[in-house]
Amino acid sequence: MSESTWQRRHVISLADFTVPDYELVLQTALSFTEVLSRRNKKVPTLQGKVVANLFFESSTRTRNSFELAAKRLSADTLNFAPGTSSLSKGETILDTARTFLAMGTDIMVIRHQAAGVPSQIALDMDRLGGRVAVLNAGDGKHEHPTQALLDLFTLCSHINPAAPSAKDIKGKKVAIAGDILHSRVARSNLYSLVTNGADVHLAAPPTLLPEEFAEYGVTVHHQLAPALEDADFVMTLRLQTERMSQHLIPSLREYYAQFGITRDRLARCAPQVQVLHPGPVNRGVEISSDLMDDPRLSLIEKQVTNGVAVRMSLLYLMGTLMGSAA
Ligand code: ASP
Image 1 (cartoon, rainbow, N blue to C red):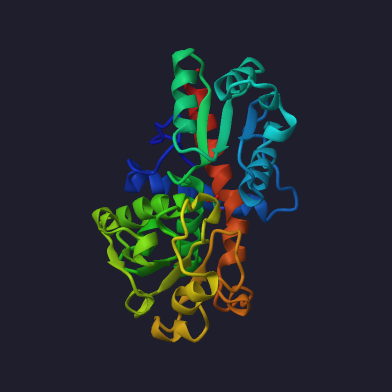
Image 2: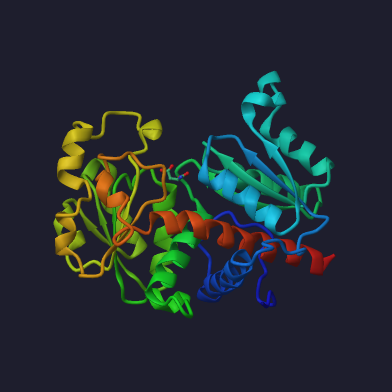
C-alpha cells in the first residue's frame, strides 16, 4: 500500500481528481477489504488520531460507515448531532468546528444540508494554521465524494473481482436515472465516471435534468428507454423531496410509471446488467421493491458493504499524509 502520490489535505469535491487519485483510493480500499475479511478486523494505522463526525444533516449509512471505518483504523471517534449540541443554543457552525479542533481533532468528516459548508470549514481551519483535514460527507446538492468513490469501487469490483482497477469502467455504459438536479451523488459520480472513461447517460424529466448537464460530457435523455438501451449498469437516485422547492413531478405514481426501474425495463439493457442505488430508497418510486432485493441484479447491499473499506481508504490516505508531513 503506497501513499506516495496522495497530496490532498482535504477532500471536498471530485472535480479535480485524477485517474491516479481514483486508482490509489481503489487499490487502498482493496487492501482494506482484505483486512475486513479477517477475524481481527482492526489495524493500528490511525492510533492516537481523532476523527470527528460532524453531521449537521441526518444520515444512516454514511455516518455509521465513517464511524466504523475510523474504528477499524483504531482512531478515536467523536460524534456530533445538531439536536443534542450547542448549535441549539445559537453557536455558529464555524465555532462548532473550532471546538472540535481545540479538542485535537485530526480529521473532520462533515455533512451539511447547505452546499459549501465543508469547504468553508476547511478554509477556516487552514486560516487557523491547524493541520486538520476536512472530508466532505455530502453538502446540499453539491457533492458526495465518498459515495461516488464507493460506487466506482463497487462497479470495478463487479467487473473484475480478482483485481479491480479504475480502468475497468472504461467504455462501459452507465445509465443514471432519477432526481439528478438535486443530487450530490449524481454530481460526484459524473466527475468520477467521466474521468475514468465510462459512457454516461442521464435520464429524468426535464424539470429534474436541465440540458446544462450535457456539459459534464454525458448524454442527456428525457426518456428512460434510450438511456437503458444496452446499459451495463443502471444507477437509480432518490427523489430528493426535501430539496424540491416546487412540485417538479406530477405525482410519485406518474414518476414511477415513466422513470421507475423495474425488472421488465431492464430487458433493454445488456444481459448482465446490475442496478445500484445510494440509499435511502423509496421502494416503488425510483425502483421496484423486488428488483432492489434481487441479489442477481442489485449491487445495493454491496455498495453499503464497500462503503466501509472505501472510507477507511480515504481516512488512511488523509491521516497518513498528515502524519508524514508533521
Ligand atoms: N444518501 C445519499 C445522500 O446523502 C443519497 C440520498 O440521500 O438520496 O446524498
